[in-house]
Image 1: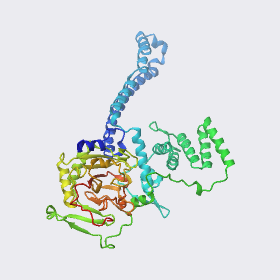
Image 2: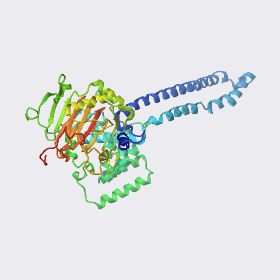
Image 3: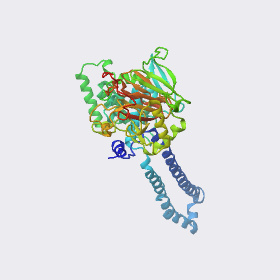
Image 4: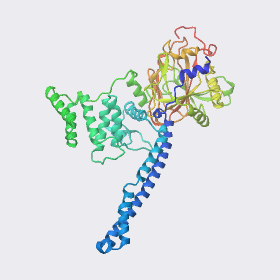
Length: 536
């Protein structure tokens, strides 16, 4: 099997239209789709206005007859012309008005237009993914739900709500928005989140008129909130909400049964303290280091300032390469253990734009190693594409530049093709290693050893979030547009460096694009030599 075919086998999944939430590029395309729907709706409204105007004209004509000509019915009907028009109107005109198909034809045309576009519209999976993205941002950045509902990104600091970021453009969430987010959590049996979002839904639904575009109602929100509180142990509040629900739906037998159940449980159970009723987040399999990860995403960790550690520095770097002598690259040494370098201005804006555009047609849901194969995972929300240097001149230029600054052989099969990644709503990649940690990893099918180094290029800026966090090393790096991070994944003895456990923090606001170049062990024998010390 050829190298290229093997890459296709490893990384390309079937095209799916149901993963819009995994890429902000796809979300941006949804704006165009809604504009087309608006055009369909505008045409429908215009046709309906014309139809109703015709009905109003008929109404005005008939009512004017009854307020004028028909004031003396016996004399009027004696006129055969007037009598004929009355009979004709009752037998024909009224029939045409009442049984016209015009309204059905108008709504049918609207529905046909919607169905034609349906393939490019979000699916249920996208709605669920978008809701989970909001909840992920809420958790990782410790944001107030009440603030998110108002379009603010706020944390509680010293008892006060403080904006961690003020977007120039934002929007508020409606009661129905909050209900759907809570429903996604509820269906996942995630009552920690469902309680918070249903609380907001109930608050917003109270005192407002139901709108036909809404999926939820006050009764729905009360019902789901009551059960969510019951599942978290707050039975007294579940009872109170159920009694309120009965005021709106007094014949609901299921709710009556629940009320009896809650009252019985309260009679049998000892009183519960408020402290024990505090909501607690569920544990997760993939985040054994959750607290450190989230702290690093919220702040830039504990990395020392350059003036505090003289071994960390910034300089103009040539790596002894003639191609960099006239235009050295700006190098910033971020960390010594693990060795992490940030190259500022590694690519130009036009180069970054070209790479993004080349990647767009090939973007597919990003995958992770799953045993012997690759699979999608909720702990990595993005889309990615692979670009060959032979297909795009700019990719070849970037590859040559990577070789200049690292001294490594980045040509296939000694390095993988350039992987371009676009993150989705709350897009992230939870703590992981780039190198293989199992002998059965699909990476070894390339027969070029493990991933010895990572070169990650930031192809865009973001307004907030999206840091690269190194968990065990306890530092994080913000997105630096057009910059590139470089680190060694393996020690010189070939063993994996545990300090390179890293994560892509969720993007709060922005469209994050990165490009990854993974360099393998083979082909680097005389470029990155082994040490005489087997422990190094």
